[in-house]
Image (cartoon, rainbow, N blue to C red):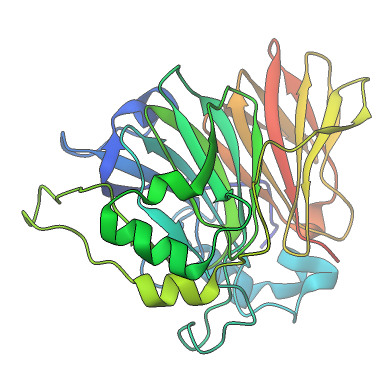
Length: 327
C-alpha cells in the first residue's frame, strides 16, 4: 500500500463552555444544536481515534496505520512511540474553561498507567475584546494562597491574564495554571494525554446533568509549578520570508510548530520524518508524486515520513501550521 498525504475527519466534543463557531472553521457539520467546545483533528486514542477521510485508506484509524506501517509512517522515530505522541484540536471557548493544570511526565503518581504528561500550546485564531487567557500565577503565590482564594471564590485574583488577539501563540508547559474563554477560538497542540485537574470552574453547571463539574484541587496543587510565574505570548522567530514567510512559534521536547504564510508555491515536510499540516486560512493544493490533494481552512493532513517533502500551491494567500516531532 502506497502512503500519501492523509486527511482526517474531525471528532466533535460536547463541552458546556463551548459554542458553535467551529462550523465556520470546519466543513464537517456540527452535531445537534448544543455547545461544541472541541474538534479533535488528529487523535490516536482508543476512545476517540481519528479516521482517514479519503483515498485508498479511507476509514482506517491512525493507530491501525502506525501498527501496519511503523517505519513508513514515522521513519527514524519508529519504535519510540506506542501511539502517535500528539493530540491536535480546535477549541471554541464561548465561556471560560475551568481553571486547570496538567501534570508533567515526572508526576507518575498522578498519571494513569500508560499516559504521558501534558504540555500544550495554543495559536489564537479568533478573539474579541472580552476574550481572556489566564496563564501562570502572580509572582509569590503559594499553595496556601490558592487554597484561601478557592475558599473565597477569588482564585482569578492569583492568576495573570491578557486579552488575546488573532495570531498570538501561548506555550503552556505541564504544571502551568491556565484557562481561556470569552469567545476565543484557538488551535491546540499537546502531548497525547487527556489528564486534566480542575482547580476552579467559575460556578459552571453542566446543562446535561444539572450539576457542577467535579474539581480535583489536591491533584492540581500537587503538580503546579509555583516557581513559573506569568506566562505571556511567545515571540515568533522568523526563519524565512521567501517563497513563504516561516515563523517558528514553539520548540520544545514534545513538538515544534511553525506558521507559514504565502501566495507562491512552497515546500513542506521533511525526508524521513512525519509532519502535520493544519490549514488555518485560505486554500490550495498539496502536491506529491504527481497527485494533488485539495487543502482548505480547517483541513488537517499527516504527511507520512516515507513521502518526504511536498509542495503546497496556494490558490491565493494561505496560512498553514506545520508541526514536527523532535528527533
